[in-house]
Image (cartoon, rainbow, N blue to C red; front, side, top):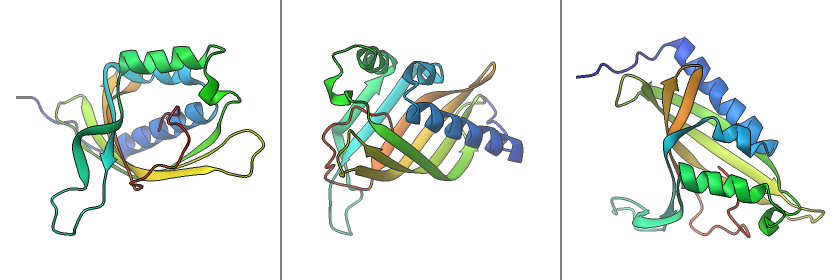
Length: 172
């Protein structure tokens, strides 16, 4: 039996700083550096959400996702963004990740923490006056490794049931 990691004020500060560093890298388009923060067994899912009656158990559709990636597919996303063929991101988006309401709990293993955070993602492209705003809650598993943490799992539950953005070429 493994003992869960003790969650101290220092742990919460480290995790919060990790989240802020991640947001800064994504906003700066430093996707290759972002990949260095990701565990090789990554699971990254954005499930499909629908509107249901109040009595329903969940408003998440099992088995249907807007994104369902692992480390290899995330690396492919990054590789594509580094080419001239990333038309969905040419010109590149300007984004701002606002990460708030960070809650940290012990993970399932001694080297992991479970993190919930709220995300507001603002994105604009080119010289047009339109913009995208995505909001939701992220459920992360961060794994402690030598030198910090790695993102092992992320589930992003968007507040929107209809995502109006033209593409989801961005990382939330």
